[in-house]
Amino acid sequence: MKSTDEEDEEEEDEEEDEKDAPEREPISSVELLENDLDSPEESAVVEEVEDSILLQQPNEILTAVIKWAVFFDINSLVELALTCKTLYGFVFDQPIWTFLSSKANDSQSASFLKNQLKFYNNDWYNFWLDYPRIRKDGLYISRIQYIRTGLSEVMTYVQPTHVVVYYRYIRFYPGQTFLICKTTDEPSKVVHRFDYGSKLKGVIEGRWVWLQNGVLRLEWKDPKQPQYMFRALMRLAFTVRGRNDRLQWVEYSSYHINNPETISSFPKDVHLKTFRFSRVRSYTPQ
Image (cartoon, rainbow, N blue to C red; front, top):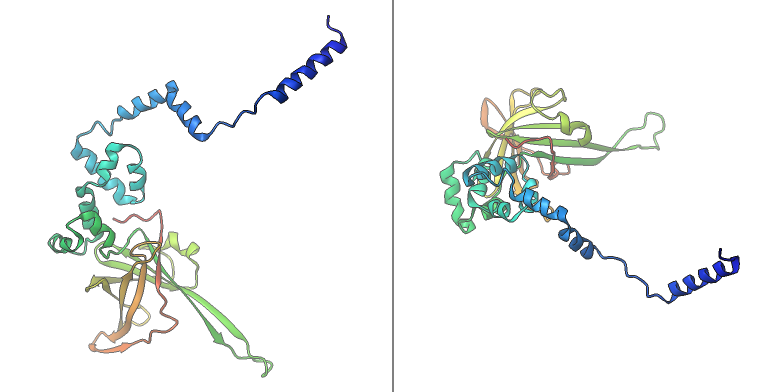
């Protein structure tokens, strides 16, 4: 058996060897990735991808699947393109963007859209990016805030001031219809209930049509004023954050249903704020 003094000397020698030994550098993420690629598990993954049932389908079926997948969730297109080289090539195939463009602009004829294609280098992908289109996978929301001076019932030298906040919501549907609502409820209380058959107060149905240069006309009838029709001209606008995500007021007016030529225009003031688009995952663009 070793004595206590011998054990202490061995421990001291080990500590000195550890001090003299060079420090080990931490393994980088690149090295970890290379190790994973060299592992047998990686070959199994590659084999599984190559044997994917989706990739074994004919090109016509694969194109049809991709069309409807991205139609219901356009953001999944990027994720799909990152899966493999084959699907990346399908993502930028012209039939995909021809399909998406025609569905997004269902209010315009196929011949009209084809005539407009020449202004976008005859490329449907460029057409999808730059051509004005109404988004149906969410809501256009306008937040209006203004200050109203109140009256004091007790002291005449005290004049209260009220900050009033309310919202306008517009949701577009295929078939050139839309729903519009003006309420004090915040978006979190409206988004998932704003649909046909909704119990929200003040929801009104209307119709819209394209005019030109990205301007559309909206018309609706308020049940509280059935003798009048309300009309709004709005222009789609692009921002850095997204395309077709703004609706700007051009004109707001009303006319009597028995005398459409007599139009009363409303001034463009603080109550006509720009609409901002907000995507809602539960909404489908169909």
